[in-house]
Image 1 (cartoon, protein in one colour):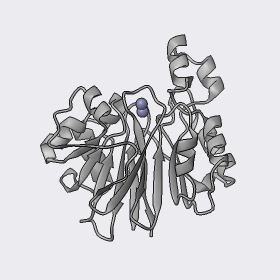
Image 2 (cartoon, protein in one colour; image 1 turned 45 degrees about the vertical axis):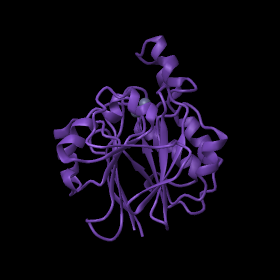
Image 3 (spheres, protein in one colour; image 1 turned 135 degrees about the vertical axis):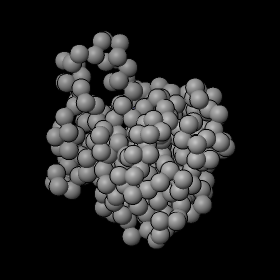
Image 4 (cartoon, helix red, strand yellow; image 1 turned 120 degrees about the vertical axis):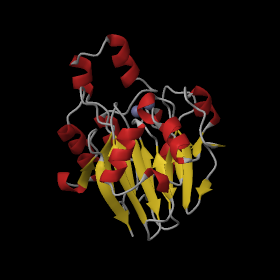
Length: 258
Ligand SMILES: [Zn+2]
Ligand SMILES: [Zn+2]
C-alpha cells in the first residue's frame, strides 16, 4: 500500500509525506522540509504522525521553501537525508545527521520504497523530482520546473497518482505586483509551470491508470485555486471533484493506493 499526504504546498513552504506498507511502522519519507521544526511537528501531528518515525528526508532542491527546516529536523530526530551533491553544496544548513547522495539518473531504494529521480529545469544547482513506488503503485511529484522535457514526459505515463505544479496564471502574473525581473524568473524556462503548461503536460501522458491528481505549489498572488483546478480537469478530462487541492495552510489529507 502506498499512502501520501501534503503538510503544505506553496512559496511559503513545501513538504509531502509518502509511506509504504500496511502499518504505521513502515517506510515513511518526508519529501522536502520547507517549514520550521515546530511547524513541521504540528503539521505532522495533524496527519497523525511523529517526526521520530520518519525513515528519511529527501530533498528536491535548495530553495528555502523546500529545505528551511531540514537541517534542524534531521539533527533533532536523527533522520538521514538524501539529496544530490549539487543540492547539498547549495544548502546553507547542510550539516545533516547523515547525508546520502542521489544520482538523479539512478533509481534507489529507501527501505520499502523505490525512488526514481529525474532532473528538472529549475533555477537551482542540481534539482530533481521523484516517482515513488511500493512495487505495485506509482506516485509522481512534479513541482518547481519551468518547462517539461521529453525525458520527464517519458517517466510520467501510466502513473497511479500525480501531484503536479500549477504555479501561476499567465495573465495574473503579467498584471500582478511582482517586479519585472521576478516575473521573468517565474515564467522562464527554469522557473515554474503555469496552469496552461500543466494542462499541456497532462495531455501528453497516458493517464489510463490515474486514480489521483493534485494541484501543487499554487501561487497565492498569481493564481486562484479555481484556475488550477480547471487546468487539471481540462488536462485529465475529469470534474473539479476529482482533483485534490494542496493548500499552503493545510496541504491535503491522506490518500491511499491499495
Ligand atoms: Zn518551490
Ligand atoms: Zn524552487
